[in-house]
Image 1 (spheres, rainbow, N blue to C red):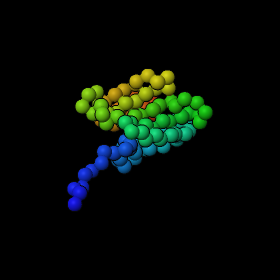
Image 2 (spheres, one colour; image 1 turned 90 degrees about the vertical axis):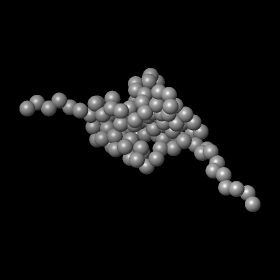
Image 3 (cartoon, one colour; image 1 turned 30 degrees about the horizontal axis):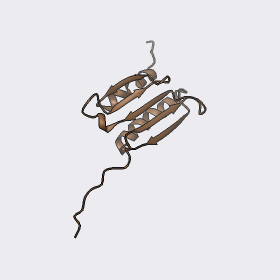
Image 4 (spheres, rainbow, N blue to C red; image 1 turned 180 degrees about the vertical axis):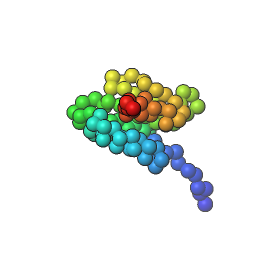
Length: 109
């Protein structure tokens, strides 16, 4: 009898809570008129969510999950339109904070 062994995952994915948090932000950005389309990619070493202003251009923002970097600078990274790293961290909420700030508007009282 062969013992049951768990195979290593063939690709990195977002879990339900992570995806719901990202899609909630995406919906609010669409409502604000900042984003119009998105793409999700699952690879062997990373999962990526890219948001676009228009479909035929570079993503305005890209959120990546790299589990191999969990013990170093954190598995979450936010990239800007030119590919620059805007934020890295261990917590998805902290990494999404620069995008959340774009949604804040000054209210005069």
